[in-house]
Image 1 (cartoon, protein in one colour):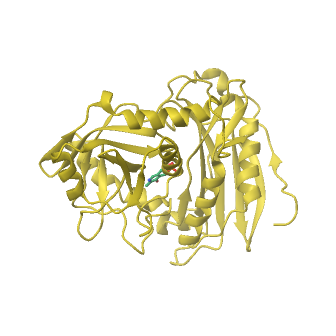
Image 2 (image 1 turned 45 degrees about the vertical axis):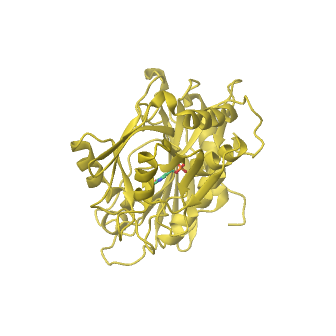
Image 3 (image 1 turned 135 degrees about the vertical axis):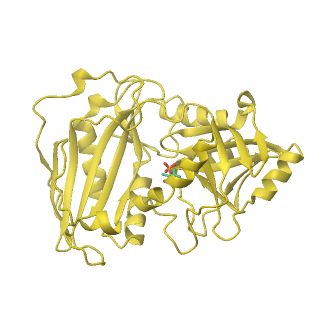
Length: 354
Ligand SMILES: *Cc1c(COP(=O)(O)O)cnc(C)c1O
C-alpha cells in the first residue's frame, strides 16, 4: 500500500463504559466500544474500518473454522501518571504477527494498518484504559481465513481485526506447574514459534489433565524425549540456578519468542546477571534442585508479565519454592513496572505513545 491509510470511523452512539467498574475485571471478558476491521481480497487490504464493537456474520464454510489459518497477538496499553495512554513494545508484536502470518501461509498486514489502526482505535477508546496498578487494556489483533469454501488450500481472502479488553491482574496467584511427558506442543519444522490458534487448541487437553491433578499448567518438553524444556502455557520460562539465569533457546522454532522474554533478558543483564539462552533438560533441573542450587522458576508473558511458580512437579519428584524468596522474579517484575510507570527512563524505546 502506497496511498495514505484511509480509515473509515463510525462511532458508537453510546458508550458502554458508564455501566462498568474497571477495577479487578477478569481477563479478556469485557470489550470496549469499538473495533478495527479490514478485509483482504484480490491481493490487497481493503475497507479498513473502525466501528462499534459487534458480532461478525460468517459463512458456515469459512475456511479458518475448518482448516485453521488463524493467528493472533496480545499487547497491552496503559496510562502514564499524567493519564496519557501508551502501548508497550507494540512494534515487536507487529513483526511477530507477520512472522506467524508467513508460517501459516497468510498475507502480511502492512505496518500502517496494524500500527496506525491500533493507535487510532486506542485513541478513540482511551478512556477504557484502567489507570490502576497491574491493570491494563489488553489489545488483541487477529487474522483469519475467510474463503467460503471447503477445499483444503490457502484461503484467498482474510479478515484482520483488533479488539480491546480492559483487564485486571492475570495469574495473580503463584502457580503450580507439572512437567508434561505425554503430550507435545511443538516439534522442529512445526508451527510452535507462531501465535496461531491451533497451538492453543492442541494444548488444552494437557492443561485440563494437569488441573485434574491440582496443577495450573504444564511445562512443555520436546517431542522426541520429553526431556528438553520449552515453555509454560502462554509464557516463556526462566530458571535461576547457582545465580545464573537460564531460559530455553529459540533456535529450533518450538518456542514462542516472547516480547516479555526479550524484555526480561535485557533487564536481567542490566541488573548484572549472567543470562544463558540454551537447551536445558529436566534432568539438569532436578539435579540442580537436589544439590540445592535451583533457586527460582518464573514465567514471562504479556498477560501475566512475570508469573511466580511455587511448585514444579516431574514424575513423583516435587520441587517447591518459597515465594518470599523469589528475589529475581520480583526484581525483574519491578524493573519492568518502573519503565511502564515512568519511574525509570525508557532507554530502550519500549513506550509507544498514542
Ligand atoms: C504469547 C505467548 C508467550 C508470551 O509472549 P509475550 O510476547 O511475552 O506475550 C509465550 N508462549 C506462548 C506459547 C505464547 O502464546
